[in-house]
Amino acid sequence: MRTAFINQLIAEAEKNDKVFLLVGDLGFSVVEPFAEAFPDRFLNVGIAEQNMAGIAAGLAKEGYCVFIYSIGNFPTLRCMEQIRYDICYHNLNVKVIAVGGGYAYGALGASHHATEEVGMLRIIPNMIVCAPADPQEAKAVTTFVTAHNGPCYIRLGKAGEPQIHTEALSLKEGEILTVKEGGGVAVLSTGAMLKYTLDFLQVNNIDASVYSFPFVKPIDQDKLAIILKSYKKIITIEEHQAQGGFGSAILEISNDLLEYNKIEKLPLIKRIAIKDKFYSVAGSQEYLREIAGITLMPSFFTITQTDAV
Image (cartoon, helix red, strand yellow):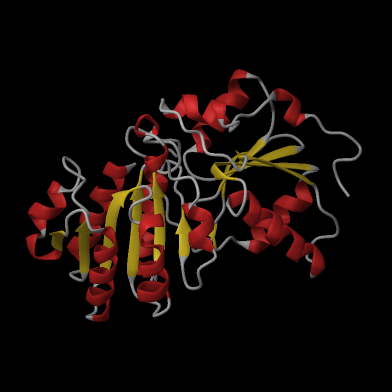
């Protein structure tokens, strides 16, 4: 996904001479093509992510479309105050890019597990939050945020994520993608959990619908209302803490749609996410997902008479 991002960013920079990339002493064997093509619009600020966010704000004030790029927690949790005050408060054209969302850097331990940043960033005014699921979504999101004048966050996987969408995408703000249409249960997935979800359904021969959410904020409320009306049970899945993340966003918007009579009733909404716990172990992304309970089970797809209220 990170390669798809940098390749698309190069394509955007060729068309837009205001695209500027800052990195925090990483991205080697990934960002070099950008640095070589646009040496006057690339800067490695060193291991100083908070300073990087401040530099980005200054460049944006001078008219640049600035991308800051680092590993998971470092351009997000470490810079939350700078993102809030320097970037979002002034509604500046800065894009925060985190590579290795969730447990992608699982072997490096909790300091590199980016499992809370979506919840933190989505509650900051003016910030758009994106979590692409595959290289095609990553390219489309990169194009979208470059064209959007304002703060954005992109949560990328680490590397090697398979391509799920067979054709190039063009995304509108908040767009929800229909990936698979099936039975009376729908799985709403964001980020890199999409491939796992599709594989699980295929292996277990389960007929269910699957929707991909490349945007966690905003979310197309009209499309979500249609989904909520169409199924008795909804399952949300994310590689993030349950509190404040994607599933929380779905619950909040669903309740608002019910309150304002956009839907008549709520289906059962089951959230698959990390349950308010640190996992202080090192291991592969798949191993950490399993011990954190970010897994589906066939029993989740059983519908009972009480699954809609």
